[in-house]
Amino acid sequence: MDIESLMAQAQSLQTKISAAQDSLSTMHVKGVSGNGAVVVDMTGKYDIVSVVVSDEILAFGSAKVSELVKDAYKDAKSKADVLIDKVMSEITGGASAE
Image (cartoon, rainbow, N blue to C red; front, side, top):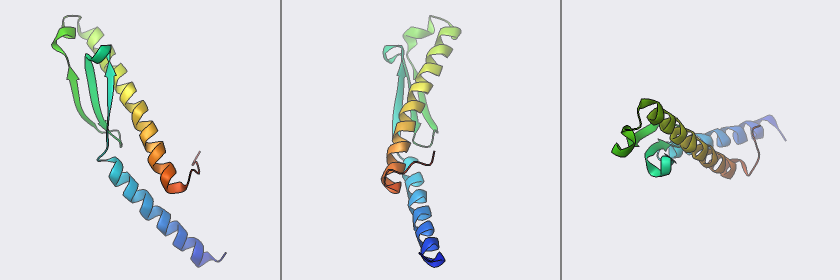
């Protein structure tokens, strides 16, 4: 395979990756904790769109609220990781960058 062909393939892959990243910025996942008491809405690029905290858990104090927010964030990030893997796998044909 010649260098021009390799460069064309690399450029094509870069274009697909860029499009996928743009797409991920419009995809959303929701992380939940405390049986729905806290919900974190995050894009596929890890941007937090919103954090919703139910009034009922505020009575438990800031330490508990902080813990539930962290748990909801971790849940959302985990779901975003799965989404990113899926989208990138579709581009690379299942080849892993790891």
